[in-house]
Image (tube, rainbow, N blue to C red; front, side, top):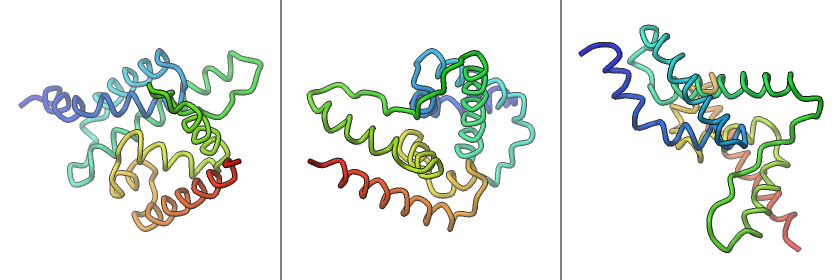
Length: 161
């Protein structure tokens, strides 16, 4: 099997999750699509360097993350206004007040807490894949995710009237 075919088989099931993750960071569907396309090309270019003993999903989401950061830098360079923190995409349905409270609580978290929650819940990465994507040990992933959830829980408690 050719390298391109092998890569396509690995990446195809991750495109939807990658798009959701990119959209959560970039807050724009078109920019998210650009990030996924750029990540797919970068991944293909670097696929020969992928270590099969490590999680592919974590490797690829690290590429997606870097592409999103590059797009945010390009946006920041062309805008004079500061970018707001990301907002969670609005789900369909009547519970918009709850969603707005959650979005506000997430915006109030520290950067590393927001990032690990994005990867865990938008990209559905396992602890091992999170470790790969963030370049940190698995134990650090577990503690950081625990702390992020606790911080989010505390923020949500603050949001209640």
